[in-house]
Image (cartoon, rainbow, N blue to C red; front, side, top):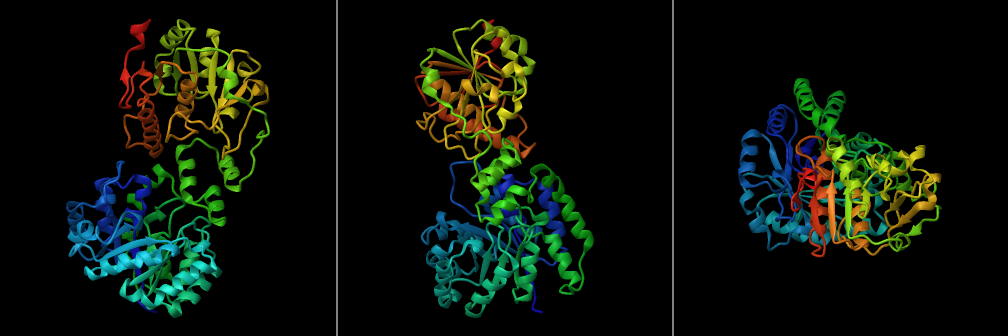
Length: 521
């Protein structure tokens, strides 16, 4: 059997979970143990023009980072990936000109429809002296037309690329399909084929074995399968399989154990790997990004995500919900008090209760059900925002049922997750229409829904309580995502000049003034 070239892309693909930042101790352990393993290439991240958001060092790979990696991986061939949509031939000298001597290979991701443009870029990269790989995406969704586009490009591929990687972007390719694709392309392809698998339906290893049987030599892997969505072919699993199949003569099992140990805390933190939603997305060739977002926010149960992926209608979705104007026309307000779910609500509960009681003319909005029951004793009118599974949390709580003082507001339809409306609240339910005032914010985020409601009432002042933010963003990954989402909403809201914004409890969010609720009692 020919030499098998493994490309470990943990730092690049794993960055989708860590925002392309990894602790130095993890990187050091990764490099140390990788030097002891038969891995030919190490893809260490992206090179990219500047984006309008924070992305970490392995997304931009400044020269000092690459020099450090070069020292730590002296025997490995370093690889950098470029996003086709972000680059042009003219941009290449400034973007990758300084990589010569540090990086062996540049890879480009491309859809079949983009292959001619990708080859144009790759040809220019190859002339700069780099090995070049093209990662051809969406394999499980390739139509006959897509395959024809690839076949038509193959005669000229050698002058543009050294390896053509077949990418199972959705993790839905079966071994039989993969074998047929290889047998269709391999006889015509002037360069070696490679495989980049995702593990949605647990077939990454099975497909890799098919690749081996069909003569493929180049395989992408990541430690513990760390990567977008359900993850990838596991480095440690593939290496152990290769040894058991006598493809590798010997394997340093201690290095395997140590590199796995280095990434195990990250797996526990971010929770990558397949589950029912990822299995469905893989089997139906659906994008993983939406599933990652839904799972990452922990706003929805798995059954809700399954409903969304199947395009089904959730329980009670046929409930008639009144338009938001029916609620707005009942009463006018000059001020809104929006109460979130942060720990400060519990810490300052008595002060909040007193302040709310002293402001009966304010619109009281609970952005979730978390503390909403605490304010029922005030006897004041309250609006509670329901999204995701919030309706289930109050389904059997009599205090929320059949009360004239509570209204419930839902995001605008269509709602991907369907709708759950407890029977006892159905007559007090309203939904926003599609005329969004907070542009560019997620419609199903609790604060977005609450602020949108307050703005519809045309209030001139909005006070936030219990939107603490996250002081330690290196903790749970979901904390970072939720913090970023809420900050984005606040940024959009504070651009509205007709409204004064203020937080009455401590907050880590930027761009909003803070006062003490105790100064107002």
